[in-house]
Image (cartoon, rainbow, N blue to C red; front, top):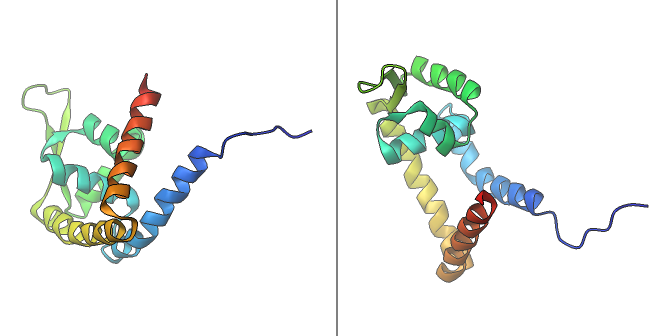
Length: 143
């Protein structure tokens, strides 16, 4: 006998929604030689400037060991710069290079155009409600 589920598979739906959105973005990322993870790192750095690598990992949803490899490749490609934190030499900080920031600017325009299309298609109110609901689910599951 198989289990009876009352609710739809929320994690799967969230993954499908993510993939639907990323299906539009991913080709542009690939044109610029970026993986999804590298884009998440650049977006975080574009929003916050120079920050501690642990914060990058948390905000970009990349595990620490994976982030090390991602940052090494990005540093090799001239997209980021890493250094020791001036206040705490045990910590590392990372920042986007001018080349990385230029890429953030270019790709963020494309991403924002897509979000504008989503807003036009769904309606401003529905998209705002979606953001609120997602924030509520995130907060609910933190407690």
